[in-house]
Amino acid sequence: MKVNLRSFKQKVRHNRKQLKTFLTKIGKQNPKGWDTNAEKVSAQVWKEVDCLSCANCCKTMTPTFTNTDIKRIASHLNTTAAAFKKEWLTYDKKDKDWLNKVTPCQFLNLKTNKCNIYEVRPADCAGFPHFGKKKVIDYLHVHQQNVELCPATYKMVEKMQAILN
Image 1 (cartoon, rainbow, N blue to C red):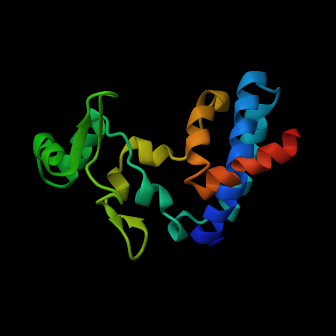
Image 2 (spheres, helix red, strand yellow):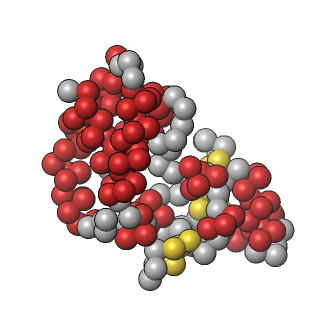
């Protein structure tokens, strides 16, 4: 289903605090069946959300680039890792991470919402929004951040809340 970002942002403004409170509560309680329910809900969410109609993650966030990502992408672009970093990335000294210099992502085609390096994209992008992690409870802090930026995460948390309440 096509994502209406304007409508999504209104929902976030209205429900942000409640959804974040729910995730905090889940983190403290770690309810039985959370991972199994999350897996089922994830399958439902992906039937309802079309990432190519949104791409808000690529428009508003930056992935973390590992050294393996950098080498793979640099090779794909026929350049060196050092040249790739110099042209496209910045180093976050506090977190010790390589990040995009700009947002939206320089590899996002803004007309199609497709990634120009999709086949070799960073692992962080390939795993986003991190629903498939085995212990969902360990990623609640990520979902708390993403609930405001990713319609799929928002739907996932909303559906999990309906199941567990």
